[in-house]
Image (cartoon, rainbow, N blue to C red; front, side, top):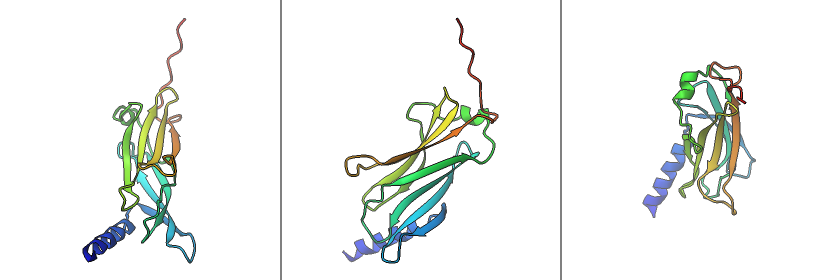
Length: 156
């Protein structure tokens, strides 16, 4: 039991040392829960930065599933970058973070909406909570970037 407690303490300390963390807001004096804000840059489209806010509870086995995401264009987005991404309907996982010691993860997928020339970033938990899977969506339109391609005119 002592070894398990030492291992759990190590996991908690490592998750507290997240180098992508850019904000930490306490939810009060008598709670161990905080709102953590993480930042990540899309690995294939470095002109997109996302911020994810989620509840984290130190020393608790609570279920921290709720999260929100906001992604914005913060640099150049080129046609070559768009050509390199997965264009399937399920997209690509671009960010993953463990949310509890009970095997729950938060993942973020990039999905490309070709018709509307928009990158979609979907944040979701990998474990069902209260009958649903928590999720949040943010979009980055390509309008005004080098990657934007006008749709061909319909033919009659």
